[in-house]
Length: 282
Figure 1 (cartoon, rainbow, N blue to C red):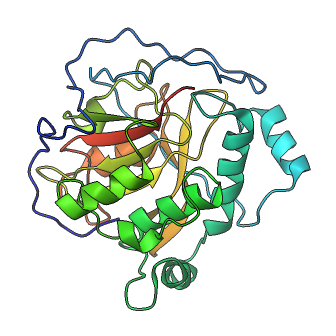
Figure 2 (cartoon, rainbow, N blue to C red):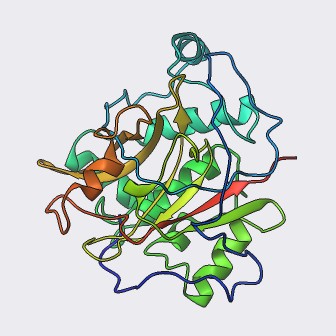
């Protein structure tokens, strides 16, 4: 989660390396029903986003231990881990596995982990979102092993040096880049679902008080979408697996929580839209 950055709405028309797609671009993308053993590795070009009003969901803390192969298979069998999008089944399993060791269910444990990820003097669970997301992707083998998580600390995609960092990690030849200008609580996630491996930058906008970065770590058989990320709780900021949204329940998940009240004490964001970097299908 990032501190306030007084940034207005993002305009990407001048970015030649990653042209933005307007939120008003008409789409007819549907998210097929998933079963626990469905593998979608032949998806065509990354779908665009539709932004008609629909809302979002909550979280369930998960164990901090990395799962064994049997635990992974149990998650697949139960529908807790399903497969969708351009990443292979092996890559999605690696991503889910890589995310779990970063879970800390207390504020103190999250502070300790933030320092390990970002360095003493820089690591804090209130602003570790970018380095955390990049560390998960790196550990899953989805971005170069040489990627330095600290490079994504308080990152601003509009800044020239930060834009170059993004391009190095998510090159245009391999990643599609979308900018959606409408708020996260106005996106119809049934038509425009997030997919495992998606890297998001969420803009706070008017009424928000932080920008945020995360990587989607898994989806389940009901198309609910999850991320291991940092967020505020009454007991302080923690790092845990959180439900981002449930397409069947507009009142569930962090995206709903972050847009329920403007300038909320526990954090509000997403009123300025969001950006997605998504692996292209091969």
